[in-house]
Image 1: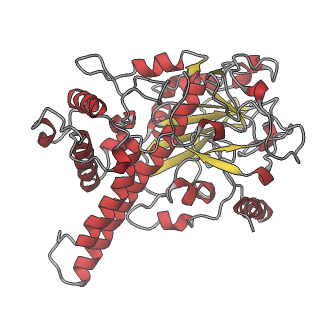
Image 2: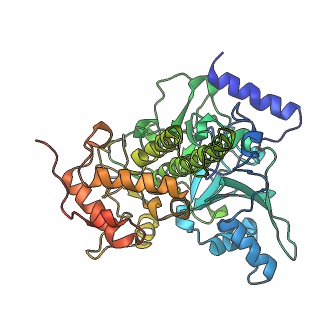
Image 3: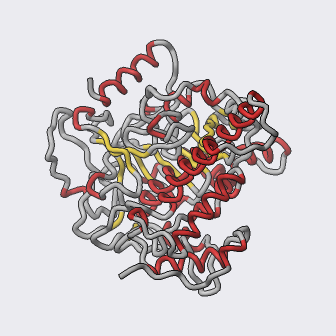
Length: 463
């Protein structure tokens, strides 16, 4: 039985027994088509996260969404409902999520799938830590936050007009979709590309593709609207099948280099008429980065928790470090380091240009070094960023990694950027790249260990 068919059967089964697979926004979800959730996937049992040391369902949350709810509870702020979008615009303002980050997905792969189709796409918005999903005439707004201790945490906000709107955490069913091998085995996010018919249903016989920054452009954006220019590079965006039985190859010339979506649906019903391709590329990178940050966090905490029990059982002194603990932590952190440095990033072959101010607004968020350089500076001709090191090194999820994990990650970053490690995963980094990233981080990241400043010049690679 194929994986796609098995996933679909799991989805149907979940519905049959009354479980509502909570597919959130792209920013969260394991989605068939995008950052929406896939199905009620056969993944980890949610109870795996309920045991110590994680205790996902009962541990206190500390993220952008929970902080907003605290401000609402104290009366420091309030949400206003406005027009067809309800609380959306007010919510984005309170969470500091830019409208220019809007991406549009039209596959029926989320909680409110009956609202979604090519004529009524689902809008997704994001910043570095929070994701928001909106469906036209939807009952709720969908939210996800990257919580430093818990990974992806999922919420809804009813669109009903009430005196005191409440953002409600969703625990019971979310991990059926957001805690599987597709999200690195942690509560997280998944971006997918899929062929979609005129009703918004995914054509499962054509397969789906899991997307991150390593995915070739020609495999991306099936089931998504895409606005912007990209030269002669091909992608699957803006494509609606004329028949659910179509077979590959499928021609998508009309979906390329699209700047105006108004002929495809009523764009005036949304905060923006765009689904910016640069925003899509950033979203794809960021979702997987959050998963790997959470994985390094969880596996480190689990290794340390197991070590405490082992020391107690074997009558070893408190704090005794086992080689197995060190190995587990290093293994979890190595995948994160590779991803943060854009290992295996798919190359671009033509200039990418978005259709909104997203790229400019994203870059302006900085921080910049003394030479005016930033990890948020885009390249968009050869690769996504000019300096290939993820801006999420500044995120709370990175800064609040367990000390043992953070130490390993910073050491490995230093070894690569200082030129001590020229192994295959990092051969895409030129000496100039390494020097620039090293200098930017020295100027902009205040908590670096002293050894980062000992040798200024990067060791050159062998000829």
